[in-house]
Length: 450
Image (cartoon, rainbow, N blue to C red):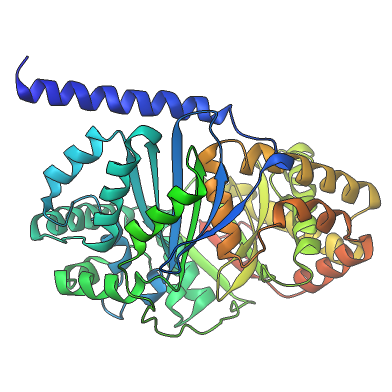
C-alpha cells in the first residue's frame, strides 16, 4: 500500500473510531442530578466549566467569544460568517490541505459558527489524541491564515447560497421581516451578508475582526469528557492563553421590536406562512420562567398546546402552530407561526388571534400549568443532558445567559415556584400588545392585511 493510501486508511479509521465513540457517549452520560460541574481557571485567566466523564474516551469542548454578526462593519455584512468558514482552511504554518489532513489524522471534529451576538466553536476528539487536537485548535483560534484561495472559495459558496435564496419566498420574507422588526439596528442585517458586502471583504478585514473579537475577557468555555481539571487548566492556556486580554467591541444598543405592522410578501403559492410578533422577556428577567411556562402552554411545541389543539386538532387548518420566546443580547420577543392553505389563511389567522386573546384575558388553568411544569422539568435531561456534546452545549449556553454554575440543580425549584397568577400576569404583559403580522403568500382571502 502506498503512502497516500496508508494516510487515507488511517484517516478513515480515526474518523470511524471517533464516530463510534460519539455514539457510545450519547448513552453514557450522567443523569441530570449527577452532573458535577467544576470551575477551572487557568494561569492566564481563562475559565471553563468542566464535567469529568470517563465512561467513554472522548472529550467535547464548546466555546464562544462575545461579538457575532452585530459587530460586522456597515457595508461588510457577512464578515463574521465568512470568517467562521475559514478556521479549518489553514492556520499557522499549515495551509488548508495540510491542516485538514492533520485534523483528520487526529480523529477530531472542529466547527465554528457566527450568531448575532457571538462567534462560537466546538471540537470533539478522542482522549488519546488530545494533545494533537488541542494544538490544532490553538492554531485555528490564534493563527488563522485567511489565505486568498480559501477566502475566494468560501465567499463563492456563500454568494451562491444568497443568490439561490433570492428565489425562495421564505428567505425574502425573513429579510423583510427582520428589517420591519429591527429597523436600522444591526440585527436587521442578514448574518450571511449580501453579494455586494461579501465581495467587499478582504483578508485584512478578516484579520481585524479576529483581533477585535477573539480575546480572553469575553470568552466562555465548557468541557465535558475524559479529562481532569489539571489537564484542562494547562490546555486552556495552550489554546487561548496567547489571545489578547480584552476585545475591541463596538457598543450595540438594546432594541424593542417595532410592533403593530402588517408585513406582506406576496407570492402566488398554494400555501401561506403566517407569523405574529409580540413583546418578549429578557433571559435574566424575574418573570422569565412565568413567560416560559405560558409560552409552552400557548404553543411551545407539544401536541397539547392551545394553538395546536385549535388550529390542527379541531379544524385541520395546518400541520401545526407554534410559539417561541426569542432572546438575544439586545432584543427579545415572542413569535407565533404556522403555514396553511392559502384559501384558509384568513380563517387560520383569526383562530390564532382568538387563542391568543383568550390566553391574554384568562391565562392558563391550574391543570395546564401543572402539566407544563412536569413536561419542562422532565424533558430537560432528555434534551439538554443526553450526551457529552449536549452537556457541553448546555453549559456554554448557561454561561452566555449569565446563569450560575448551580443552575441545573436550581432549575426545578425555579420552575415549581412560579405561581398561576405570575403566569397569567406574563400572558397579559406579552399578549395584549398589537403584534406585527407577516403574511407570505397570496393576499388573504378576506382582503385583510393581517
